[in-house]
Length: 311
Image (cartoon, rainbow, N blue to C red; front, top):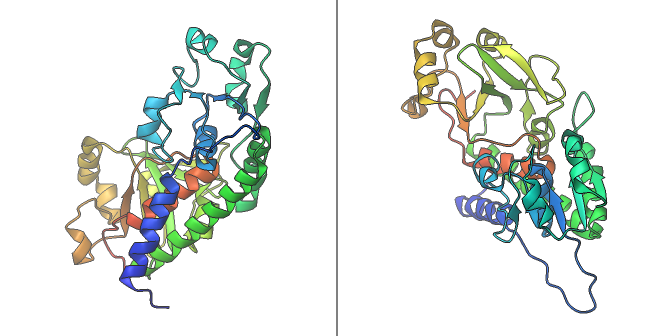
């Protein structure tokens, strides 16, 4: 179905604005007081913010801007230091009603004293992750803060944004359907994101397929070697998640394996349709549940693929 350029621009603008919006709920004398929440977890902070109820404190807020980015955490949210080891003195000065964390931060719980602690996991425990896996923890988060409807609204809005992003992507690149997603550790070792990562349901909602070369670990990726990428079909585009340094790019350019694979970061190839299909994606937090999926979908709509995109 043909979609006009104006409509694509409208959808893209709408998606970007709604994903980044941080509506701060209004209150009145008849409304119950909103719980004052602290979380050390970026994914929980992003989801709460996306619902319109950002935490009053979180860990590594300044670094969040670089690695997660959206939704934007409001200025009123305090930074209590590193996520894994918050500053006890800063924490003691907070007026809190509860802490919401994940099992990764269990070691911090003695610091919370008598505060109620809720724990959720914004990931999938299944071999193949689906959108359904992320519904329950998101709704639980809404229940913890006494805003179940806000959680449901957030889920519905996010799913719609991701589907719209898929429509935009498929219009820009009608021949691209299969994506393999990797991140470089060095020139020879990569993480390939697997079917139990949030990339699988996000791409599925976009009408795309995640291609993998093995089962993932508990973090949603499988370690692979550079040469393993030769197993990918020619109609699979490679998505490289940043950061990747200029030095690493230069080393890859000199790598015989990389040359034989046929990939290149050279943007001049975009119009020449030379080499295998590839794109660079800005750092995308893979442990943020629905919040990360919406950011991933938005970034794919603006990604520039080089190489052969007429697969």
